[in-house]
Length: 239
Image 1 (cartoon, rainbow, N blue to C red):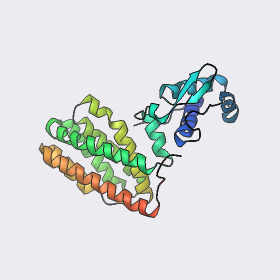
Image 2: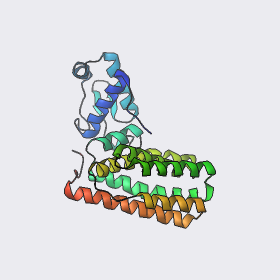
Image 3: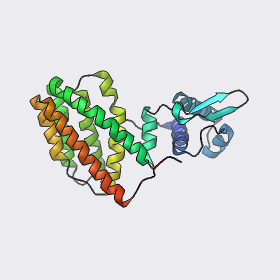
């Protein structure tokens, strides 16, 4: 699970990163470190370190005589957990949500197929505990979101593929933003039965049933999100 960084340095990274992702500073524009120091009320060192972190994520570059500029979006490290969180935490676009849904549709069925043949007792316990937490969450949207995330992390971990497990950052971003929109609108289907079907298929060692259950779950998630978007459309593109 990703969390916003703490301290003045972390807060500066968070604020400047969100602004860049939001499109406050278009690609190619020159940023003013001195202005950031004054506006955020932090030292030159804090801003310098924050900009170094953002440069490492592909958002900024510094050149002599040109200063520090915003890099083209094509250069951004879009799989970075912070960038994914920043894109999804404020006003996610339709395009961002569609990209996340497509990645989930590729990754999670494959993960479920492997999980059905490789799961261990501890993997099943983790999935079961997460499902119990979902049932116990009731109307608590935050608790439901965290339990849902835990279930899908456990599913990917049950595949016992280190690289596949690292896709957790994308799956979490997709789930978190989808759940925040849908549960916040109080308009969603009961997803516990299909999660239980998925757990049962993985426990039974049935790859085809596991894939079918994941696909049903993703379809339900898409339908719930579409129902919310029909009443409160999201932006089509970043500015």
